[in-house]
Amino acid sequence: MKISVTVNGEKRESEIEPRTLLVQYIRENLALTGTNVGCDTSSCGACSMHMNGEAVKSCTVLAAQADGCDITTIEGLAKGGKMHPMQEAFMQNHGLQCGYCTPGMVMAAISLLKENPNPTEEQVRIGLEGNLCRCTGYHNIVQSVLACAKGGN
Amino acid sequence: MLPAAFDYKRAGSAAEAISLVSEYGDDAKFLAGGHSLLPLMKLRLAAPSVLVDIGRLTDLSYIRDAGDHIAIGALTRHMDVEKSPVLAQHVPLLAHAAGHVGDPQVRHRGTIGGSIAHADPASDLPATTLALGATYVVQGASGTREIAAKDFYKGFLESALRPDEMLTEIRVPKMNGAGWSFQKFNRRAQDWAIVGVAAWRRGSESGVGLVNMGSTPVLASSVASAIASGASVADAAQKASAEAEPQSDLNATSDYRKHLATVLVRRALEEASK
Image 1 (cartoon, helix red, strand yellow):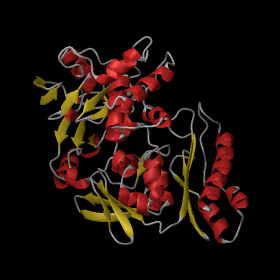
Image 2 (cartoon, rainbow over the protein chains, first blue to last red; image 1 turned 45 degrees about the horizontal axis):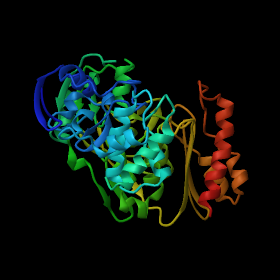
Image 3 (cartoon, chains in turn yellow, blue; image 1 turned 180 degrees about the horizontal axis):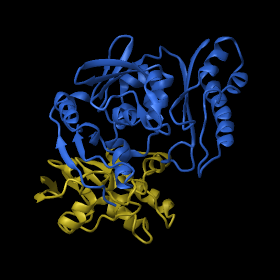
């Protein structure tokens, strides 16, 4: 089947098999490999990306369901060589260790602040319940998100 | 992991969706948010040959005050149920329970109708709407009918829906100021409940639904009967498992689940009785 998806601001048209997962489409058809596949069972959140501005787990969405939608991946955040404030906050606050969960964490965190611009620490922790960090580096991840919120971004 | 191959059909209306499913029969499944169905398909526990995507039927996404009840369109997402001011005012138990389904990403995609039609005893919203005495409206090739939540759940992932019927609306009675509580016992925030309890109470009237305490969501009628006849919360909670036959699995044995149900029903009723 044919789908048309706007990915990071660019319209992409592709011929896909209906069973193609959104994450597979993004990584394999469009060669945007910044998004990682972790558990592949909608538990870990590593594959989080934005679909019409909201974080979704792209291992549990069909590319067909994204037809006509606006998708943003981790590659779409930096503008003109300048990192997104959330990326910057993760860097400044040591919000990553091995980095595997990071693209998903950043996408989920941006979605979280969009819904709740001034969260408490507890609200950040609850808001990121869908993202697992196997380095268990949660403390600095939460600090990063709070720092980004404090910066008004 | 990829699902087995299937044909994808996108429905432009409820009538078209029902006609497509009627055409393909048992091999077809409705796809709403996909957060119950797609995981099963990826594990090859389900392999429908046709998916009828109803995810774009936005006219089935609404929350309306309908007098004595709130009418919720089947395609309303968990996030919209969670954040609805109408539900916060009239059915706060349901809004709160919706906020405990999965995690934010799941709640951005998953729908209340999908969760109920999937009829998973471990899901939060089937047991919650059961406790609240909801009615489900279903539409089929031969018309529309209403099914009481207590008559809907027939077995593990089995409901009273016929293959050509689609759940279109959930009608939940207003709580009219009743006390309520939602208890979810799990290992990690995003997990399914090992045991969950949705409860409300208004004087001698109450309703208690149990999550993951059998092959279907369970209405703990014996607890409500005990409360109605004046039993204390602690005594009523002793009846928590009277209607339940919980399974043993990796997380808990059947006996442990019964113990949890007693504790959680007591806590829920204490909170709902305040």
